[in-house]
Amino acid sequence: LPHPSSITHWTSSVDAEPGFLEEVFEYLKNISPSDRDCNLNFDAMSIRKKIIYDSNKSQETPASEALIFMLVSLNGKWKWPIGYFFQSKSTATIQAGLVTTAITMAHAVGIKVWGVSCDDTAFNLSTMTHLGCKLFGSYDEIKESFYIPGIEWKIHYIPDACHNLKLARNALATYTIFKNENGVINWNFIEELHKTQQKMGLNFANKISASHIDWRKNIMKVKLVAETLSSSTADALEVLNCLNIPKFKNVEETIKFTKGSKFTTNRILEKPYEKKVDSSECEENFDDDNLTELDLDDGCFDVLKDNVLNYICGFIVKKIFKKIDCTTFAESLLEDQTLHSYCHKNSFSVFADLKTRCGLVKSSVDVMKIATFVEFTLIELTNNLTNLSCEDDSFLENHILNLVTLICKLYLKIRLHYAAKLKTAITLYSINPTSPVLFCPPTKWRLSTLSASPIAISLWPGLTTAADSWKRRWTTLLSTDSNKRD
Image (cartoon, rainbow, N blue to C red; front, side):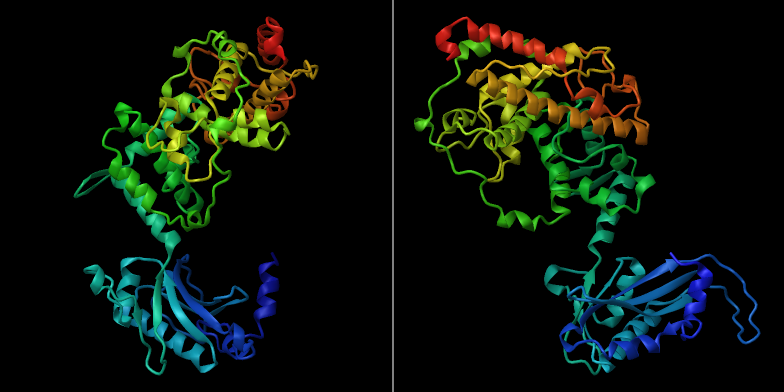
């Protein structure tokens, strides 16, 4: 930015005294007629009180804020500040008069103001009421538009959506519990969701992190608010409720509140990623005996982690479709769906079923078992290790083994990307290093034991120990029967 003295020198020839800027309105006369539709925004900004001697003016009360008015083009081509006023204490009547004056002056130079936007403070709502809006009462009684004398069209009041989201989040997080006719909306459910995901080492496809929970440090960031009160957070709470987790009992109203805080209109245009696969045309290429011989301990992965793994497997299958040409093998990776499946067939597919809105690829149980095996092996082999950095790309030329290898590689890649994200969270938000942040028990491995080198570089380039382990096991299983190997 230019030095303040340079800005002062440039504006010395312009009349920039408090009030409406006449030179700006003169410039607006030159705007193309097709670009003259705009919106009026205004906001009060706090300023530091300072007493400056001026021999030409006498003011008794120092100002505490500046009221700024700006015109913003509806097609996004221009925006101009048209005036500002220093004030200490004002009234809604005075502010309504300034809004009327701004719209009238814009109309005088050929600029059409179609709407007014501002923060939804009580003072601003009172200003809109003085202009002719009715913002309280029943839905049929609400009137969101008003007229200005001398202007024939309606001018609409447009609330600031970002500010409303922040108000909703701040109120819920501050007072913790809201009551309605059907139950309670509780901020503690969102905090428990974060704790559950942190303990599990995985998340339910949402953005909730320490920065979202400790919101006072980032109170002005709209992005964090939108990610907290979002449909992804609601989906995570809903799956925990469907799985009857005790800490999430009576979470229904909180789900409705978080899901209804943001309008997801883009979903209206979504189309299915793939058409339904006819299971009668698929050939069975995996032998169930091979998968059961992995001898996995069902107690190693609870139902929550199984749901996340199943969701990840769908993404893995989607990526595999782009890398292999074998149609028969590709179709065998998909879930065998019935024509009318209205309920959750498996406890580990609840999350994927809730997230599926005609766009998700759902993997078969075989892919789920492979991912579970890789996760368990990764937990075993990374206990107390700080670095795994070797490469071994020598794989047997076998269709099934290559497919299993591809599934394992994609899963490990996703897993380690998330590990890097958690490492960043530890660094930035000082997460307790003794808490399990990557994998759940029985492992004692902690992400905080990693060196300062980039985790994505130090962990991913090989994972030879893990790769060798599952490759030896699969090679043994596949080599026991030549028919199975082919």
